[in-house]
Length: 309
Image (cartoon, rainbow, N blue to C red; front, side, top):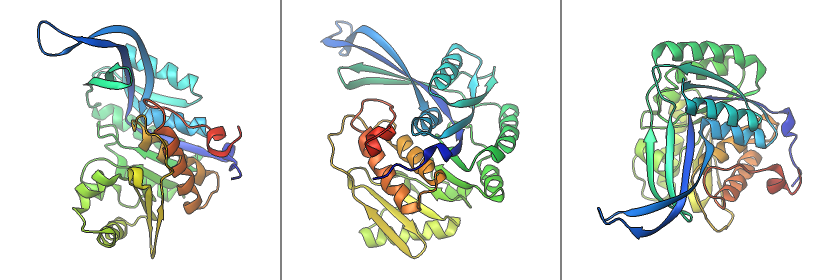
């Protein structure tokens, strides 16, 4: 497949960022104090998580990427900023002294997670208002908007962002969270997974019933398309009067962490580069399949997708 001209893509990512930390070690013995494993710590690794991982994936595919988000005035926020700069992402991070930067600490033995510890605080109203002002200023410099909602409170103005983005003639892609999708009304594309969609439309009996429910939701929200990610069963793209199923490429799964980030990032970059919706979905499906062969949050490169840099 010929590689799209991703250098033409200018993607604005807005959402909840987090610092993913990994503690690796050997957990071959049980504590004498309680029936829990003892980890003999060996090394630590830090990676970009949440919307920061989405932005990193966009940049790795060749898009000029800008990220808007909120962090605390702390060491974790500084580390996030450095990692984003290293990844080639232009980041505008509002610092909120009243919160701590969201972190996910994973304790790992081999390639198996033993424990995950989450640290998070919702940002303040004043900082969120400032971020919305930044969003309006950044719109003219992008040709696609990607809103990555992790439910951490950083997208309080998401409905207004969708309206502003669409008014400016930009496609707006949303990775949704929670069971209230009314706030995403008017977006171009939503990318729920099976569980997320089921929480919103209820359980379906078969694929025909699934299509009816998904198309109903798409119509109610006024979406151009709804892209359902189905894990090992691939993806289903629901558009007005048309449903397209894309099979997953069979690969050995190492870790699904961050796969949704990779999928929506690839979809965004390909659409921003001028690919058709169905072509962009097929490329995003391939990108997701490549990502799950990698442990932890990771990027997919043009060479892996298309066989060349």
